[in-house]
Each structure stands twice: as structure tokens, then as C-alpha cells.
Length: 435
Image (cartoon, rainbow, N blue to C red):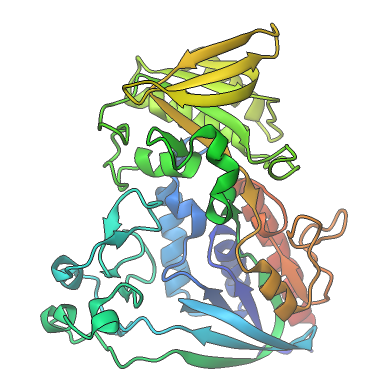
């Protein structure tokens, strides 16, 4: 007879974790979802649109965010991390560290009065440091839960024992500077799903990108930074502008395999770059149909259904120029226009191309802290520090009762992440329902 009191633990609140949690919750299994950021949503929330349909990313994600927050069988622990896991398949226990927001989650209504009056300005991590936010902030506009968070490291009260303006202007008295981190104990967990997503190579080591002028030339940006530039809710309000002078670019170069498929970076392919680069070039063209886009690639890899026709459509309808090449180096002229020196692999010639903006498709890497999490969960990692999974069973880990999905075990696109999340949820539910 099934033990209905058993619950599931989902670690990670990106699209894969959300889908897994919703599937389990709809099977009448209680889910504890743990997310270390102040809001769930993950990387998908940072994207402007998704391939191959070019639908609005947040339009797809927002209903799932809302459903996840309101579902009676899901308990969210945001701004939290798993610190300890004991037990075995069918009977795990977990210790969760919930960090203090210094804002009462049951009182804050996200009116924004506190942020409006906050005197501090710090780099906005969600917007990839392309604009500033306040020391009290909403992680992103459509974030769930819709609750403000105080950045302790940059708040004047914690650094100089001054200010507390946010506390004075909050009519609901939601600010609580006396809040402390707390430890939450979860017992009777039947199965665990790990869906902690990924980082990008520039998050850990931007030196790999120095030869391309990243962090040196203002008009060289990463692909995720470009996503935020494209987004209507991003730092440029959906208008593409060069960071050096605010002018709209007329020529954009997209460089593939940056930090991957080489001895100077990671040796594996990130699998999704060819597709999202074409998507970004398409969207940029829709902003300005006189735009010239150049994609510098080693090989084009489009392994999903309809993906090859998507690339062909980019070339035919959006006038994207694909150049099979190897990049030598990037310089700038007196107007801060990037000049790309490259070898054309079809002709063998060394050529140069001057553009207004360069976008780097950077390597997907395992999430920061994955070694510590793997140690806590007692699961194995592969040679690249992704979660190790057996052949033909990509949702299984080296420990029974612990499953995985999404980019935490290998780079993949959103449709694959969602499909895999449902597979992991099905396997986790089997443990709980069968008892």
C-alpha cells in the first residue's frame, strides 16, 4: 500500500525544476522546492525569446511560475540551499538553510516604495551587470514570489549602521532587520530531483574570453548579455544599442564555440549555441531589417526536430551570413568598432571584418557549487563536473532515489529539459507511490 505521506524534494527552481515539481504535485505528491535565488524562474527568465518558435520566453514561463507558487502541493523555499541529506531511497531527510531576506514574505506586496527611496546603486546580476539596481530589490520584474530582498552586502544599515529609509517608507511594516538565517528540517522524503541548471564560462573565469576582447571592449558582449539587451524588460527597454555610445548597431558578428571545443577552454560542445545564435540574429533583424548579421562558426549543429530548417530560414529570410571560420583576434578602431581577423575555412584566406557589435556564444558549464552539492547528496560527477548519469537513463544518478534533469547533467535546450523533467518526476513518483 502506497505511503501517501511521503514527499519529494526538488532542488533548483528553473524551468526543469518547475516542470518536475508541477508533474509531481499534480500526482498528489507534496513537493518541497528549494531555490538559492530570491525567485524561481532560472535562466529562462533572462531570455527574450525561445527557439525554434521565437515565442516570448516569459509568456511561456509566467503561467508556470504562478501555478508553482499557488499549487497546494508545492512548498517553495527561495533564497535557500540544501545543506545536508541523510537516509536512503524512500526515506530521505534534508536540512535546508533559508537565508534572511530582511523582508517579511507574508507582508510584502512588491509595491516598490522601498526600492524607489533606497540610496544605494549596485550591479544588477539578473541583467548581467548592464544596469544598476537598489540594495533592496525585486530579483526580476515578473519574479515569484513577488517579494523584495535586501542585499546585506550593499545595504547601508549593515555596512555603516545608517539609513533604514526602506523601513520608514514601508506602510505594511514588512522590513525586518532583525531577521536571521534559519535551518529547516525536512523529513519523510521519498525521492529527490536535482535541477540546479548551469553557469556560463564567464561567470567563473572570464580570462578565457580575453582574447576576444570581452570585458576589455565595450562593444563585445556575451550572448546572455545580448538577450537582456533584446528584452523589453531589460536595461535597454528592448532597443539594441551599443554600450560604448548608445547607437544602434548596423553590423553584428556572432562568434560560436567561445570557451568550448578547444584546449584553452572546455573540450565539449554546448549543443544549443548554433540555435540560440540564429534566434538572436533573427530577433535583431526584426528590430532593424537593414541589419547585417554574420555568424562565425566551426560546425553548425542542429540536432532537434525542425532545427535545421530553422537555420535555413535564418539564412533565407533574415539574411544571416554564415562563415565557416576560425577567429584569430579582435581589435577595435578609433570609433570602438570591433575588427575581427579570421581564417575563412572554405577558401583558406585570412580576412578582416569591421562590425559595430560582437556577440560571444559562450560555453555552458556546471553550476557554481555543484561539487559541494554532489558531496551532500553523495552522487558522482563526470569528468567535466556535470552530474554523472548512465547511458540510456539520463535522469538517473549514481545514488538510488536521487534523479536529475536539465543542464545540470549536460547542456541542452528548454524542450529537452522539460521532457527530461517529466521523466525524472515519473521515476520519483514511482518510488513514492509504490511505497
